[in-house]
Image 1 (cartoon, rainbow, N blue to C red):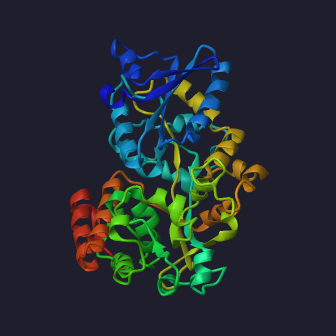
Image 2: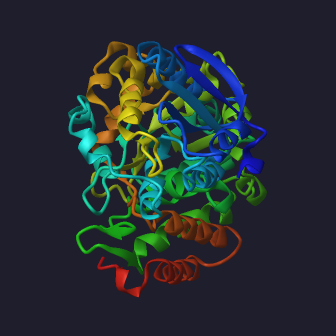
Image 3: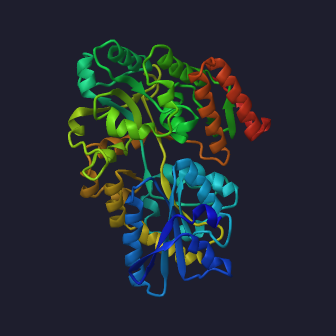
Length: 459
């Protein structure tokens, strides 16, 4: 364990003072006996050189340690990509010696971690939490287990839409204010870009196993949940995973069309795990990409302190709702996700850990965090603050999308089902027919959840 983490470091806050220590000390301090219940460890993802989460937690830790001089707060940043973070986080939670007392959890992995025994219920602690009623109901459901217990406090959420480059659109003769009414409208716009003098990639959606959950959520599910197939991936009433869906095949067929008609990036670009950085720092700002399905947070890549400062983006980039397949139903579709804080099974003192959690999620603290992180809040008390509503040209648009959003079936089996989705996408990208890829997915899901937990689509 310590051998895998020793190159990293963590911050310790005692009465407001911070010290940087090697992360190997985390395991070393605990190896000789029980952990100190007066020390609160919080683990979180640090992606690349970004320090937004660390700054949010550090500010709260300084204030908390000054108010509670007998307590020490240790920040344990896990420097890793999304999928690697989940793995490394589970590794440290698995042992009483290395477990944090609070952990930053993605809603899509939370119930899987509950099923694996890494997290404990906090229903009794939530009863006294003053902002519980401020949290959106869908976000509360995302942290509630099948046993009815609450396993986390939601903090952030996100929604997804179509980002389009107006300079590319102008070159292709497309409107400045564009709102497609169907998938075919998206394909027609991509064809216009392809056939124009522009050198831009017409359309991009994350797809394939190297893209991880981005492929499932920003890509495939933004299509599937707009097919009118009713149950999506999972039928909540029947409590069964859905197989044999025509909407599933149609979503894969859309992906196949992108490749067949040269409407998207090359296969190599799609399979590049770092393609998102290329999109944000060069392709979109340099008018080398026309349309992108992506999340509400991506404009953080163009702020003054970001790698690619792009102050003109609000004028150059347009936003359009993702349409349903044929414009039916509500007409548009978005997927919402989000992150929150949970208490691991091997916590030193759960009441003390929750006290620090409450400090982390005070109204003003979360307003500042939302602004610096460029995310959508799940809290009504945060959303009503003028600072929040005015921090970005896009924040109100993406917050409004929450009203008609879908959430992933955040069940223990979902991470494996999501991997099967990514494999189905990649199979189509590399030549397999949508029907055969869908059949392989059906077989994989049956193996994952068991034949008693699947059903054929009714639509």
